[in-house]
Image (cartoon, rainbow, N blue to C red; front, side):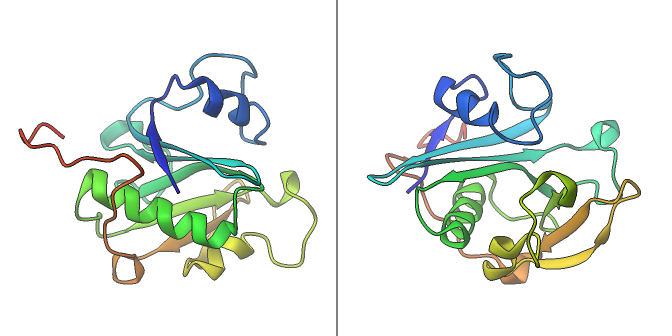
Length: 165
């Protein structure tokens, strides 16, 4: 379902403006510094966006340095969230190749999500596991490489024939 976009994509930016992690609503840049994969899905029933961030070196402020990070995911009726998550992981693998040893992580702010019994449930249904909390109290979920789906091209994705990917 996913299409590759870029950090300046306006459809994704508008969705980012509605995500709880957004710092400056309306700002054209909605992705942090570092490498990223920005995905957008549009279906008959809605849309979704996803951002994978991959910060290395001094850019990282958490103990899972080097892991791929789902820094934003918002589903506005595009389909089952756990399926969208699994597909986004597969597309990230298609873009980046083999995952880092720590795999993927994401942070869930329980204070800024709808009150529910099991925050991050859609990630858990996609195979992610709760591995603790940050110093600031965010829930940390992880998907290890052995639990990841195989790489899969996004819609309209093409292999880079010149090795420039």
